[in-house]
Structures are given as C-alpha cells and as structure tokens.
Image 1 (tube, rainbow, N blue to C red):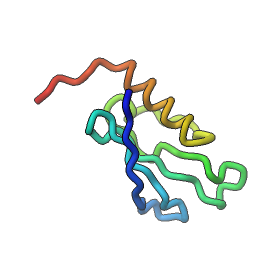
Image 2: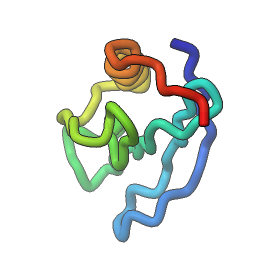
Image 3: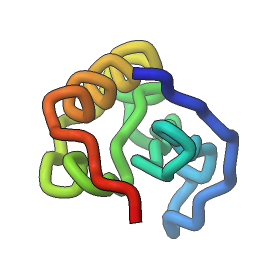
Length: 86
C-alpha cells in the first residue's frame, strides 16, 4: 500500500498541532498528530486523530514512531476490499 504524507497543522485544542494527512491511493485515509512534551514518555509518539473507511473505528494506542503508524495503517487498508469507483 502506497501512502502519501502531507504535513499539516491540526487544531487539537492543545499543544499537539504538528500533524500529517495520510493519503492512500489519492484519498484521505487518516490524520496523525505528533504528541507534545505534555505527554511525558509518549512525547514524539504519533496518535491517530481521525481515521476514515477501515480506519474509522479502530483507535489504537499511540504509535512509538511514524514507521509504526504507517505500518498499522497500511495493514488495515490492505485487509479491506478495494472500494468501487463512483
């Protein structure tokens, strides 16, 4: 699964504004947010702020790094059948 990441500022209402839009096949699949120093040991981890399609109902714990987040997203997307074109 080929994922494209686009940096974005996310209005989370906290210090955690550094985010990434995750596109799969040109469609928005997820929004990731990097956890701030306010999270102590989890600072620098990535959190699935929003997921779409097969990622919508699966909220895992924070990912240790961006590679772990991308791997989880790719596996979830690969497990779902491809959507039909409109």
